[in-house]
Amino acid sequence: MNGNERAFSGLNWLGSFAVLCALVALWWVASNAGWVSRVFLPTPQATFASLLEGLNLSGGSGNGELLAFTQATIGRMVEGWLLASLFGVALGAAIGVSPAVRAWVQPTLEFIRPLPASALLPLAISIFGLNPGMVLFVVAFGAMWPVLLATVHGFAAVEPRLAEVARCLQMSRAAYIWKMGLPNAMPDILAGMRLALTIALIVAVVGEMIASQSGLGQAILLAARAFRASDLFAGIVLLGLIGFASNALLAFAEKRLLRWQQP
Image (cartoon, rainbow, N blue to C red; front, side, top):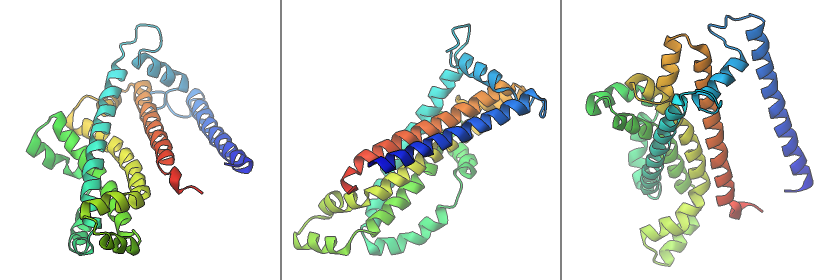
């Protein structure tokens, strides 16, 4: 990265921070000036205090319940994302490497892909019951599609001459996938995995709300029903932080893994 690129990146970060500060300032004015009742819109101070107390970081008598809920949600999100990535890459490679299989399976994929994962929760409840495994299944199902479709697209976009070279070298299908197909499809796969992680977090929260499973989704729902606005906003802020941190980590990993593509 040259000097101009570093300066441009610094300006972007400064602009992003300025926008965030402006939004927090607007929130502070709206809550403290009484534009919106504090029953529905707590002050940033109250939200921050609830966040520290819930995470047991205030040094006082916080119960740390929010920390336990956060760990449950992150665990469910990561487990579902890992399952989705594993099955998505495996199925996507099997489909994408063969034009004939792609032609047969593509209409079915396009039929199932638009189905929202949350719409399958009643079906999953009837099959698995109200248990953590049910939520994990729905999270993995919802998060699998970006990885699967990205993998199919990545393998379909591999240079045809590479397949000819593989045939000339008498490479097996597995060797072609591992040595030629996977490296060329990796940018698409990583992009799909980043999107899948966001979907895994969303579906995990929705599943916790509907299936009454321990997690941030249940904590937010209970806080809303009890009109504990500061706890509600603390949970929402925490979800935003989790999404931001997880995306940043994957973006860093993607940059490191794809260093060979950079000039």
